[in-house]
Length: 442
Image 1 (tube, one colour):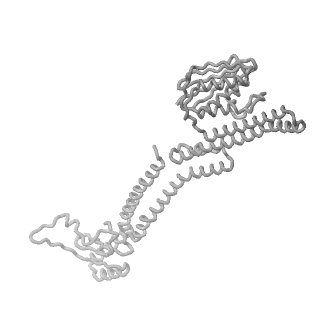
Image 2: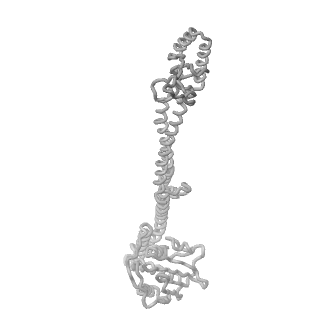
Image 3: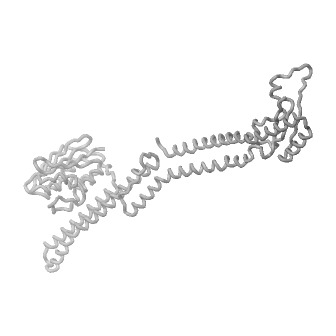
């Protein structure tokens, strides 16, 4: 699902708001319902008043009943009376039994009291004869819902506010937990902890913030690797430059002693050329690794390109045999002549460097699945299997090697990758190393 965080927030806020309104309405209704009835203790008191009034009425002592009523009214600060009621039907009508049983001059003590009415209701406690009633305006102290307005304010404002604050805190925690870890990881990365990762700390979470963490991890991995590679590259270049610089210093010292020695000048010129090639190759390699360009906007004849490279190699290595198996033409689209040419040249040069004088290097170009396969086989000592994958690392040289700076195959691999291809290396059972360049067309 796309925008999972958006839908999570929508569900929490929308559904939570509806549930909140329902819950508040439900609580308000239930609270009002419970607060609308006279307390059981007060009901018992009213019934006791009714029983006392009935006892005095039956005794026939009206003066005592009058004094009791006066005392009760003063005590409860209300009105009370004992009355007789008798309903006479007119015009030959007959009273219904339901009317007779339910007839009342006031409210029964067990009935619901409306909290919004300002006046207290008159309570009716009928005597046993059904015609005499003890009436009393409900005393204020017995009125239910005395704190209803405070409770209503609590339910309408305080409870919703507390619940919304709780929901906001949960949402804040849900959002800030990954952001906090991302901030901590960014700080660690800035302090040099290039191995820090965030996505694994978020568990099964799979929303926009998890995607942000994955993007951060990818950036951290690439940036950290680039920084580490650049540091290693700088250290390797510093090490590699010491040797030619030392030789140049020695040659300059000798040239100062013997100004007319052309061999020394030629040696200095050669060392400077080696240093220039090292710097150029290192800069090109750094550009390819940092920018990761796609060099796929040219079309060329691969046979012609390989053939011209082999002609130069034959001139440079006259003591090795170069055997080529090339088709009449091999059109390749979506590539780069400069990058691919330099990569093939480095691969061929590497094969010739490791083939002893009189040995043979075979170069075969044949169609592949979606392009061409260029296979270069030498008669050198090969590479130990444990180091086979490391020969494409910058400045890597097999133990005992002294020629070159170890940038040729590393640069060739990056250049072939920039054109959409790849390089594979394998040792042959008969001896020697075979490099295969898989070059796809557009």
